[in-house]
Amino acid sequence: MRINRPVFLLATALAVTAIAGAQAGKTPAGQTLNATSLSAPAEALLDGSALWDQAPAHRISLNRTPPLYDTDEPASLEIPVLDVRVAHAGGKLLVQMSWADPTQDAAALPEVPNTPPETRFRKVPTEADDRFFDAAAVMFPAKPSAMAPSLQMGDTDDPVQIYYWNAARGPMLMEAAGRGTTRRTGALFAAHGSYEKGRWTVALELPDLPAGTPLAFAVWNGSQKDRDGRKYFSVWQVLK
Image 1 (cartoon, one colour):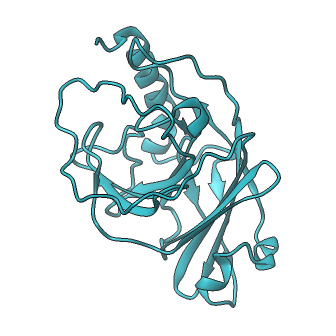
Image 2 (cartoon, rainbow, N blue to C red):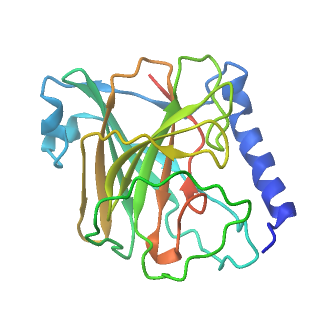
Image 3 (tube, rainbow, N blue to C red):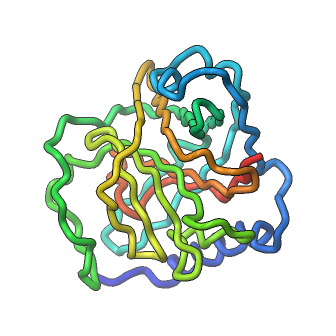
């Protein structure tokens, strides 16, 4: 199986262009996230509480990754936007992500095995093509930095942390230092997801990140066989 290199290089170029402003120390217009301080315990915001109405919703455009492998099926832009609310509460940063999805791809699965990271040079498609699930994630730098890391899972000098939620597996804290290095840390965090009337609403509990921290968002659509780098993603948004 061969990687479609021209398409992959184009995707890389687009990602580099999208974050150029952030890496130059600038905050692009319309790419800031205002966090609302709420006098409520963090756990009160994890179950779709009406308290979220006090935090403004930020509508964020999502990009669709192009096919990376010759065998990838075409995927349409079914999920063009993501609504994000951010709040400080109980010494934590709470992020609520909401998006329209015509299909609910979820299941009850056993606990994730403690397996090592992927080491094969070339990945092959799984034969279990009915086990792709909806998911969402928030990514931010693992260490304070004036520059936004690469959108391709950070890099050696600027690693990232990924707060990942899966409709079948639940929350998993991950870390990465470049494309192909993502690994599960074994740590967990509080999260809650619900699906109602064709819409996912997922709340994640993050550390109380300071203003100026760049955040990037991602969504996976199970019905389009999204997994790993096949997903929807945003450019960096700066916490304010």
